[in-house]
Image (tube, chains in turn orange, green):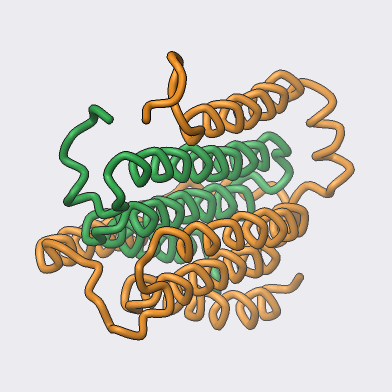
Length: 172
Length: 102
């Protein structure tokens, strides 16, 4: 992808990603918040694509669409007003949270722009899927297996945490 | 044009938005959403470095895969904790969850 094409995809999708990301916490409806987060992280996949990371971009779209749909279900289950029809406020300590978050966000952005990053560009294209496949089956196999085991343990742990009753039977 | 500092700056702003969500929201699920955005910013950082500093480093893609794994795990365990807390306290509002004991 040329520099112009990268810029043409990167800037609009980045702007959209940040706007949808900020709107996640501005809406009073959790269903809308979940869908906005899905949009923000899905658009992030588009940003990955614009940065020549096709594999990671597509993976991001697939992972986030699945994860966020599950998240929307949880929201609808645990909210008294998932549609946000009553316009309830879901914030606390709003001013301090906004001040701290703005300071951190702007601080990180300024730091990123002012830092003299090393220019070590070796080429222009990201590794292709084939190279990533060899990496998975090669020296990063242990890392990949560790990630898979972590997900498995999280699934088992999640079921144990969420299941009714504890080690000594039902608690009611 | 797009460059590494620009990508990192965007990621910094995204991290700030996520931090606002994690600190300012009262519902546990919304806090998880804030953390998801912060992890998304971390992924964007890695992809930026992968694109502009070490384009042929396949191991760089692995950092992104690890962060994606972390996002899934965090969401799964977080949801399970919310289910457990909701069962005990009938609420998912973190201001009302003042005791760890069920």
